[in-house]
Amino acid sequence: MAKIKVATVSLAGCFGCHMSFLDIDERLIALLEVAEFDRSPLTDIEHCGPCDVGLIEGGVCNAENVHVLREFRRNCKTLVAVGACAINGGLPAMRNQFALEECLLEAYRDGIGVENPHIPNDPELPLLLDKVHPIHEIVKVDYFLPGCPPSADVFWTFLSALLAGREPSLPYELVHYD
Image 1 (tube, rainbow, N blue to C red):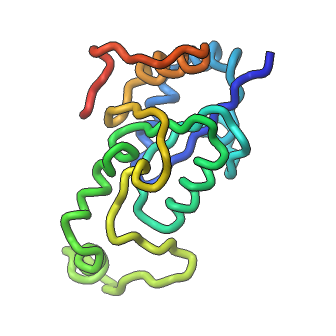
Image 2: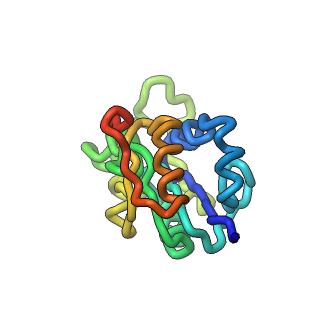
């Protein structure tokens, strides 16, 4: 029986959702019996190939995030937005209440402790978007796993059902929006 291919990616966030995913600990071994990992912290593969399930954390704050997200969506049959940043922009979206220029000036020119005041302008840096967006504003999302981050038990419960061909359903006590 062919294993289900799973891939993960992180955009603008803290990587906490990936760490929580890895907290499923020894249950990863059981997961590996039915799943094969493509791009993930377990494989260190940079670009995702075609896969069955894609888990994505982080909001969309720059042009590179948009590119990575669209490429990931094209390669994933099922896309899962993981955590507050992917679902609603999370902490990175706190800058949305200010103009981008104001944020850059505060961070690189006018902020406390700035010693070499200049706004970085290098072609190697991705172009910042005016606002941070949740991923569903850019691509179609099939499932949402709330939390900051979702617990290891949320990942386990969700993936166990999905990989077994059942519609995932999280018990109330596992769902947290903090």
